[in-house]
Image (tube, rainbow, N blue to C red):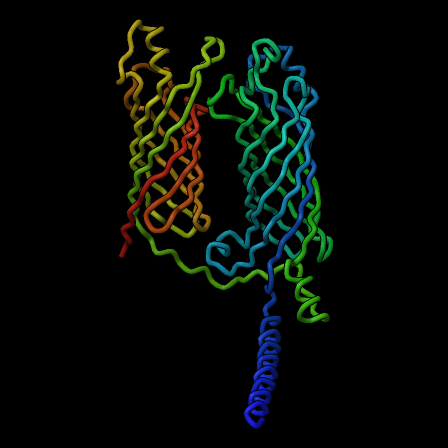
Amino acid sequence: MKQIFVFCYLLLISTITFAQDTTNLWQTAIKDPNLGSHRYLELKLHAGIHIYEGNGNPNFQSALDNGYKSAEIRLGWQSAGKQNWQRVFNCPSYGIGFYTGNIGNPNELGYPSGLYGFFYAPFHQRPRHHFVAGLSLGVTYDLAPYDSLKNPYNDAIGSKVAVYFNADVGGVWKISDMFDIVYGVDLTHFSNGRMFMPNLGLNMLGLNVGFRYHYNAIAKIARTQIDSTYIAPRRPTCVYTPITPVHHYHELSVYGALGLVQLSSDLGIKAHYGTGSLVLDYDYRYSNFGSVGGGIDGFYDGSLGYIYKDRYGTANAGDKMLMGLHAGHAIHISRFELVTQAGVYLVQRDNEKGKWFLRIGFRYNIAKHGFVQIGLKTLNGGAADWIEWGGGGRMRFYAK
């Protein structure tokens, strides 16, 4: 009996101690102004015009004359500057979004919707207003592609699914702790990277306006299960501790990628041809923001075999290969990099590819030495040549 009494006593003491410890932990936790997960829902409306790069066919031009109208909803995470890269970009926000719109005559353009990820970096900040620069990347679907019988005048889109890209510059006006008004100007681009022809792509320039609703994901749980009097902050308090200087380094990397392309729909050939890219790169990390460098490019385009055989009567494996040099820059966002490169051709049979090219890529670094990357290589600087799907390895040498 005595042993049972002692056991119950010890159990009671431990329960009280645990409750006191839990209470003390909670009281310590709520002193953090950034406790929880600060998020927002954003609803935005768009309207604007098409920048059409086609041959001016009046049958298709009329489908674009009334411009476009669209709407999107976004779920965003607002960072608080706890990590060094977040302070470099002034406490950015990022998240996922859904897009839907009327971009013209649906019989010729379809009813497109899309899913994407986005990133907003604030600048020129004031207590109740700041500007943002944003990028979004994803896929759009339910397009009405070119069809020689049903949709013969559509020379902009050759597939039902395309890459969705949006660049946005705008403002955010805080009207209360709960709501913001957002506005801006943006450029939206649909393209499949010549995987299906025709593929001039759609470019839409317009204005947008909407609102944000801010909330803290921890609010309901904390109020119902821990402390009914606790009011969770809807917005984070951005940490402005000094940015840790970057450890400068030199980097050597190898990048390989594959792709698929079609020839012009005017040729009536529906076959797909393989493409390849092999890139040797050198980069120097000059700051937390970015790195700069250059490299050597080797390209393979299987569709050149048909073009040169038709043009010259013969084509060998070497005719499908090109070599070039490029200079480039990368913006570093945590494990991600936005890669931009401009290059010139050194070796090619003739000027079928023009004299220069651009590459825009999104890279995700894996562990210490690996990365995966999706990129768009352009034709003579402008039109899409092909989409690169690949990855590679890197080696860093830190400067003393």
